[in-house]
Image 1 (cartoon, rainbow, N blue to C red):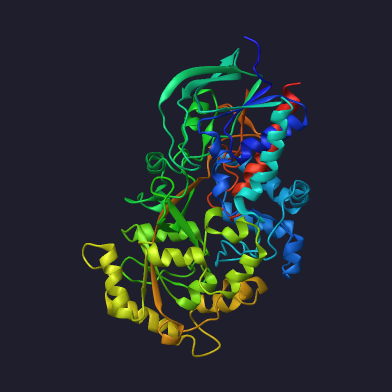
Image 2: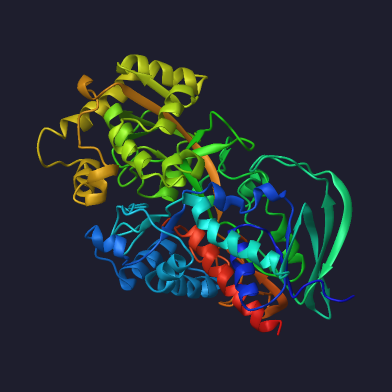
Length: 552
């Protein structure tokens, strides 16, 4: 059978589109095979906030941030905590990626039309020792246009390549098998799914209408991770994070099912670091869901008081936005799978943002007028909608009524005792009577406001929660939100999938989340944020260039 293309790409998300753009820039022909309908082109990236990890950028320097490759690498390695034999390639990918982020990444993206919001965000602040987890400085650059803005230049290039006859899309084609000839992966076989008019992100039909087989010289797997497959999440859940949550909500569409990982493994690829995953602890149910158990992550500033299910304050340094997985481990150790924020109107209007392109219409729509309105008009409209319509938000002027409603929302035996909650809040409030404090969260708040970006838009002036002038009081129930797979198919720096003996599986490449964003897990145990879209771009670029060279 003659080849249908030079390369077949499985998955039409960001990593697959970047790989396709690089292939066609070299004059190669590709087929993009995608199980979803065309309206979901771009995959998970479309729904993202568009955060990009950059090092020593002009945006940072304008915000008086001193950053460097050396500092970023120290932060990355302290966060990743590589400690396994199979971390050889993940570590090499980490070093290469930080070099990319400190080098040509920004200019390469801007040449393709990306622009960045001028205020740099400070995610995963760590709060421990200098060599441990966390970003020493702000590095989270929001793309002007959010996730759709990240996708736009690559979608445009791929569409242009379609017009030139270099790319064909095969939507509603679900791959069941990677085919081989003489040990070389050179094709795919699977089901033709019935046409679907499901809106972007909504669950599409799995009705089978036929089958297909395609041939090429190489195959790039760009199919994503396991975040929507709760069964796989629980099967691979690490003991270090406690027992898997009984109740999880979902931060990615239903199609993020992990099917292709096992299929690539059956073709000889080595899957490593299955137990490394990235789930958020600030999840709330979407009052207007698109996919199954649709959850939104709160992107909090550092001021909210964080309590466990029984009303005990989380320990140092588990403050909002400091250490995601350490907080997850602590919450699961309580025997409950949820926790609480208690805050004020002053905090929510300055510090609360919601993850996702659809929750940030000002940034997604590239409207400076709306952005300025966010800073001057009180509680942002998407956050206000959750306050008014979301099941997980409670607003009350007095603490007794707030705690009573918190217990009612949790259901079952009342776990929160008013006296316990009040003691925690009053003790915290007393620490504001002096310009110094033994409360490390208060110290962290004052430190955060030393950063211009936090003082302007992300950290409220420290104030007493029980002072009526700062109210009303707000409680938010937070659930575990599934999101990213940090492990994946082991790959070398050309994104070639490696087999059990450490040698490349000829003809097979993997990119994006399917490859743990590079190497089978370049984040190690934890991420610094803003690194997932960038990992898709970096690995997709690597695979596209390497495959273009290999197919001749």
